[in-house]
Length: 591
Image (cartoon, rainbow, N blue to C red; front, side, top):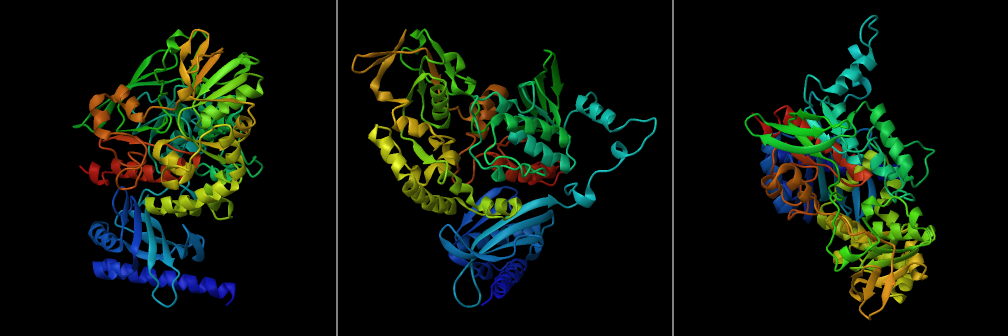
């Protein structure tokens, strides 16, 4: 059979399945829907059917939920998606499937989805996985291509205001409040602001730093992204083809600043978010801000997006015995920019996550005598070839948007299954490094349930290191290693060990992670709001991320966080939900 014939057969299989699926939905026939799926199938819906991110496991369960939700949203016009990767045979999480992208319509808007058909012999292939996503709201589509902006700001108005005049006025917010206030101008804030502007939502970003991009510039001197550049594109404006595979922090910071200008995003830098109080009757927040000149402003947005670090927000500063007696310098890793002032001196780094390793390596490179303290077992993988396996699909030549959909189709059980497979491959690839680390007493693991570092990131935001050299230095004893239980206490000149010996220090860096963003919510919005929403980040009982990219228990409060890839992909769904809320379409915000 030729490749063309195989491709045609795959397309036919997907088209036939979609036809039967639409017919069963229209008839509200749960039994017919169940028969379209293998018994252990799963369905992940992103906003399209449920106005939330929800995963449903099992053919009978998903068929019942499909019937129930379809009665409200009236899905129709299911077809193989044009301008997307054609249906193809592939392997996902160890299973051979035919994977196809499809489009559909609902009473609300335009959707895209992914179906994976089990590659069994014979006719009537059944689905193993189904993804449905809402991409746009009808009448409020992204202003792209033929719908790109036009009007007064882009017209020749001789003697009148030009584009710059109107932009300057827009940024002042003298006669209005933004519909959406975004706290943080990192990748989370910028990506969702760009998505919102493209669908006509007035959004203002506030950031405490003097310049957009400082969230990257002000990090430690040697920082370079661990994700490959083709994984990290931002909406509407991919990185240039000439860019390096791994982007240096200052280059990324400059890109953020340029991105905000090019995408015409409204940003107030040097601005601190002080507090917010929500008024249920009006459906608005009262927000207090402190500008760079010390003056305070009060705004009344309908929605607030916390985009200032769902994974890494308020530093965690543990109480360590005797640390108050230490006469040297103590800092959290978030404040560490360069160890140049500690060159040729003695430093202790507490914590063996990414920041701990990077700070220790930076200090070592500057000639410091650096020792790292391990508190818990750590997942360690080499950046290449191991760590990049997680985003391997993005290097296969598929469009970024298709890769995002393929990734979104994974429910937690599928995510766990695929990461277990990858974790075993990583163990094999990194065996020599791990053996060397074990030989000097460094403790490693492969994550909860044997799922490796990526699930650790999604569950807790840390506990791993992607090796770019520090592990080799530890294994070679170039960077010293102590286990936390070897330390008795801190003393004025350094630390005292359990064996009675002492080690002199000039610097202690606490690479001890961050508190859950619920803590920051408590500070900014009060105890009642913090208790109402609960923890931010990590999986909930349904296998979805808690409070991120989706409605929270507090009306008008949203969270956006994660890697550049996660922010790019999920900013679309967050923006669609916010637009639906502003238009009174979202069930939680109907008048």
